[in-house]
Image (tube, rainbow, N blue to C red; front, side, top):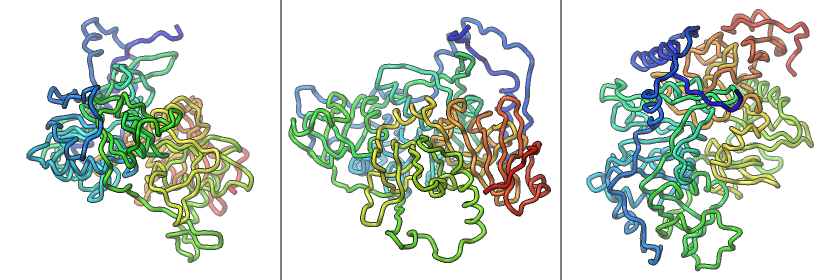
Length: 562
């Protein structure tokens, strides 16, 4: 019956798959897994099992009993300094830290927390999209200082020191898809205890098989928690729980003395959500103004959600500076020499990927090769580029004299906005994505299978970066076309186009088109089959077969890639 939900338990195949991936983490060697199926009917869970299942939390995080009290409603919200404002934060607190990369991070408040030192303030659980930049700013200043025991985040990025701390048991890292992270925080601030999402279905997130904590020898001693699943209208969804904080720290461009906040551009990604989800919200303001100086229509976060205000004493940070040259100049950071073979291959992929972008489309482009696609659009054709950190209408890199640290893309690079652009918080961004409002999403891949399974965020024992927003981007493939743009083989010569993915999945049966430097495949997601439809100039069919680790058929009207 449409709309009726049912509880789903893990099948024998799920258990086998989870055990295999846990074995991978122990051995550190990726192994090819055989897709396991079962025809055994799922037993109806008992009432006791239902009660137990419904009490599951995705995270062990709970608000600390020693969280600081909120300010009196009748008192002033202004505090003299960040040191005074964080002096009563207790060890063991859950701290929600706003920002995306180094954009919009509460640098003044983080510095004050660091000055407390690990003897005074420790065992924190820090929640953020990522942990800042090693040695430069963000939560990295607290993790490096030994003050954080657990991180809940979507992406480690290039923070090698944090990765080492994680692999040697000094800190726990709970990975959470970026859109799910935003929605868990939003739910906490809205009084919603749990919700269902398609993100992470048929992945290690659902199975609870992503390592969370290691011992000093690198052995996994804690995994994530399996998610309860239900089926609505024929689709499977995972239950995720609200993520509350004891304290939230955020940065705003302008704040009045009533606590009303205005955020600039992409600094608003997580800030409004986190302020609402914490018992105590502290904002550092670049500009503090009198009540009434902010037009009510310009308020991004009403003062009811803000408890303490401190002056920002540290400037905005840029994590990755990217610029372009003016008219007639060479692109900044790009050699003027003739393109090498690698760049020619990348351009070939991007040129073909651009054909997936029709005039007026709303598109999301993953980092790397996908970002090159717009440069191959024909003159006069416009597409609206959506960036999951809160942009609709993203432009090119800025000119050197037009860099704005408050405008970055999902790769944490400086960027620009085109006329007609909009910026918004992360919950709204992922509503666009999960809701199927984006027409096409182009992503890179570590592996893509003949059935359209995608793996692009993790190599057990070798690469542990996090999924970021990728799982959300592929969560609605019936409404958003998922295109993979990647080189055909990896650096070690192994094929990226495989019969079955051996790496942890980002999404199952989600990819419709695969574009490589050798050819183009179309995926029949219902039948789980692969068809070769285009081949690159100078590439023979035998070469494609020898470099493809998957069964495929050849279209009768096989075309040549332009």
